Amino acid sequence: MITTAGNSLASIVWDAGARFSQHAAVHVDDRTIGYAELLDSAARIGAVLRQADSPLPRLGAVFAARSATAYAGVLATLVSGAGYVPLNPKFPITRTAHMLAVSDASTVVVGEDCLDQLDDVIECVERSLLVVVPTRADVSALRVAHPRHRFAGQREIAATEPLGEPSPVDPASIAYLLFTSGSTGSPKGVMVSHANVLAVLDSVWRRYDITQDDRFSQSFDLTFDLSVFDLFASWGRGASLHCIPDRSLMAPDEFIRERQLSIWFSVPSVGMMLHKLRRLAPDAFPTLRWSLFCGERLPMDVADAWQRAAPRSKLENLYGPTEATIACTLYRWSPASTSACVGGTVPIGIPFPGMTTAVVDDELREVPDGKHGELCVKGPQVSHGYWRDPAKSAERFVAMPWFSGPDNRWYRTGDIAYVDGEGNLIHCGRNDDQIKLHGFRIELPEIEHIVRTAAGTSFAVVLPFPENQYGPTGLTAVVAGTAASEDQLVAAARAALPEYMVPSTFVFVTELPLNANGKIDRNAVLAALRDGRYA
Image 1 (tube, helix red, strand yellow):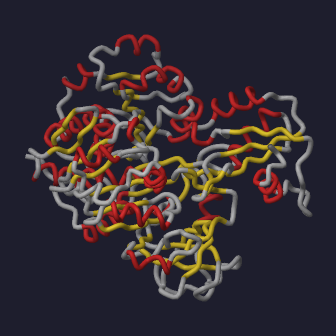
Image 2 (spheres, helix red, strand yellow; image 1 turned 90 degrees about the vertical axis):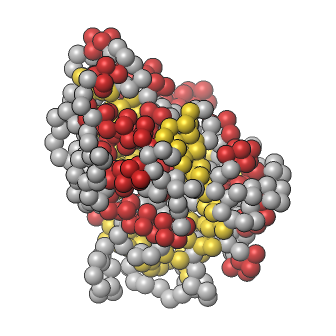
């Protein structure tokens, strides 16, 4: 008999799995995995992971693409009492190895698709790891190749008594450690607790009335925090998760119809692509009852076209940084919403229940409605801060001098916004060099650090260009004072950065314009790109 183990992500899935054991939990790679099978796999792998010696906090990595191993690995890690650290086979090996090394994870669940990278990744980790490969019966060759680490495969999993229930955890402990782009040249880890995620789930389950009959899309890699919504908003209610094949990610219209999805969640870029391809025909998605977008600006014309394609669906634009757990504000779209849209962009709306927002000036003083300032958020979704970086945490997680209520801990998002006459937040850009591209959060200085190092020059800048009517579609690096070739710089970028952070264009110039402070004038460089002077 499966029982629960308190307020944790594993326990809510265990509860649902006990009630809906015969229901489908995941459809992936032409396989249907029921709740009974998913929980059994997690209990068996989790029992092996539980054997690892680990100091607190306990963390375990999951190195897999969106696959049966990935989903079971996430749940197994949580069942074992550890928080999970997602690693992505699409990332450069050096980046993955760095994330694994600095996370202090003591275990790694590895997917079949990542075995060709495993040698290079774990050899960069000095501590001993317990590496579990659920798809391999015999892992003796791995033991010989890496005597510093321990390995377990199918035989070891089968020989271990499965866990009968999730290991108890403190709700304040880390549920997942997710690395985002960092401004100093290395990704930074955001610590998100079980309590943070459970606060989100409580809001979305109530608002979206999710049941065991719902059929969710699953398009996000595990290294994208929006994947947490897909997995646990569905599994916690006994719904089914439908993993979209990579080939259909940007044009999923047929997949939505074939799987008769009821809940859609993606970045707006997917809607933009379908709109561009003219595949958002009226009533194209008759089964959708909720259409949710998050991760970047949602153009008004895309929202309108999607709403017509899913006329029985309610459409909402969500907003939220990783540090505030998945999403923390929302805006309900309707045909009457056009008057609230500024610059053709849908508002980011109002806070989730339990969350509070404020727009402040440079001195952290709250500004009146209608005035631009930095958007700050507080509430149960605000995460612990940055892994092993108290200075950065203190810089971004602050107390407001004017606030006298309880829980005076706010996250400074770095986003510029204002509150309109209807009480909706309008997003207006950034106060730093962070951007969103196809939903991915990118710190431009991280790319510039790689390019400048490879080019042997301080005169390099990376900008969101080219653009279309919806915003940037790629990245352009403009470099001066280097003898390095484009091939050399591309190779250096690909060796250190995920593909979505590699500039699509490199422009070489004799000099770059400087501002009054002697720094590269980014606006002047972008203007030169736009008017063709750097063509």
